[in-house]
Length: 224
Image (tube, rainbow, N blue to C red; front, side, top):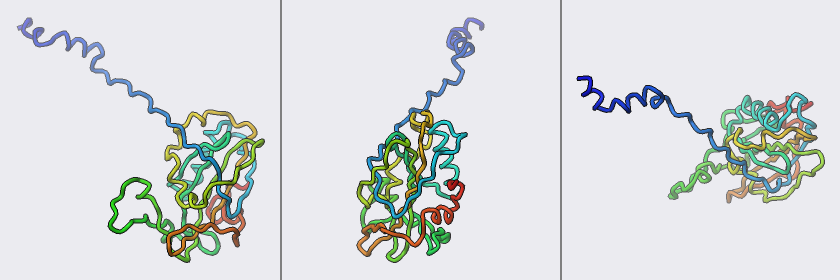
């Protein structure tokens, strides 16, 4: 009986007992570099927020600081980019009122669905459909070295769907391990509207300052 038991694969059972049954170590999730943002469209209004809080020693700590504040105020669809020697974070367009506060009952424009057309990509799925006459806003937060200028270029149309072209992984880039060295934070505010043909219009001026936009969005913590 004993020999019969060993014939049934006792060697492999011993291997299992010695470690073959241990769960294999999961390989570390591969990091994927954030896409590069080549330029920033001219904003409606902007504000230099200054240096990050001194306790934030790495670009990753700064990105997490910004992300935590945005998520606390329901900005859950965020795009992350490399930009210059730092990074950029873009928010999904939201519908706002005359005082720049979000219109809570219909804050996020619905996904744009083309009648009779199949959804071919996530980009199609997340294309938003604004309504003529409504007012929308996107934030783009920049963290970059103090010795470089923010390049204002790029098509205005990208502000409507800019967030969806970035990475959705806030921890996915080795850039985040770099130290903060003279970096400064900027808030760029884009007031958007849409005409009957679906074309995006970026306002050249606003009744609200960048500071008022930040306060109305619940992001006064960025103002120091």
